Length: 236
Image (cartoon, rainbow, N blue to C red):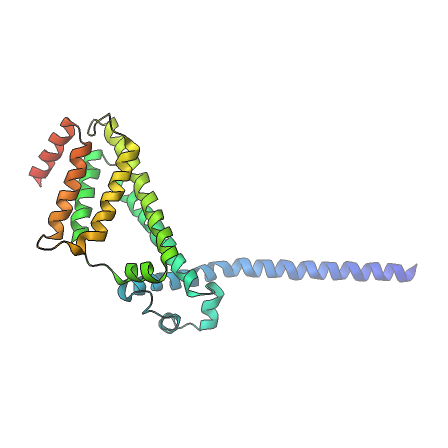
């Protein structure tokens, strides 16, 4: 009887000790998460900058670790391989893209949004060389590239759908528009511009951008909207 009682107490102490260790480990991990997230974000941020500058293939894990003052062993705690880092960079780009759209267009009238879209197309035409990041992504990571393009298209379509609905409500856009087709048309138009601008010769990219956005606007603007946009252009 005494032996059974001793065994019971021993088991209880072991269970209690295991619980204490597990609890301490849990709280240690909780305390480490902000540090781990900060380290992971530093890797992603640097990779994003260097991939855009030099391309994915030209930037090695060794390069990133050296610049960050980090061992490869530490790097592999966050990313098991380079593909995972590429995906994390793209996820960050998508989040930034969505945030920028929200920040740029939220709470603005349709005409103000139109002005922003026109300015974007004009500024985009100034950097019409295909960046090495996009080239490497398409050539060496075709599956990831396709997912990336699909994600960008969805983000753009969602924005254009919301924008068209707002424009119709404000009387700037025609009320008989097929909104779904308008969003698809805009994405296709944008994609055609991006893919072919390097092959257009003897015409400035800015001129092509102006014609492209003008063609879209004249498809969707109401008579009143066209008058307002023309007036806005004259003021500029």
